Image (tube, rainbow, N blue to C red; front, side, top):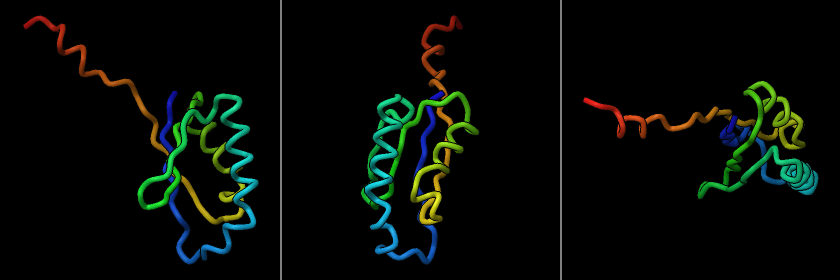
Length: 96
């Protein structure tokens, strides 16, 4: 299952609190990319991380995201959105 994960900042966290953990965060994401669990990663124009994950369910994805250093330190959290295949093309082939 593909899952969209969108970073949400924790109110009151200062920019300098992230700095000591950014290298560990990047290393952790790299490892997840290498085992094909994080398929794509981006930043929004507002500087939020946006990840496309590949997991069997939301629970597994949530557990992995919770293991990221910035999440473990309580500096960010993620909204998790499961993605389903688009069903609309079937309408092209329905008989009326």
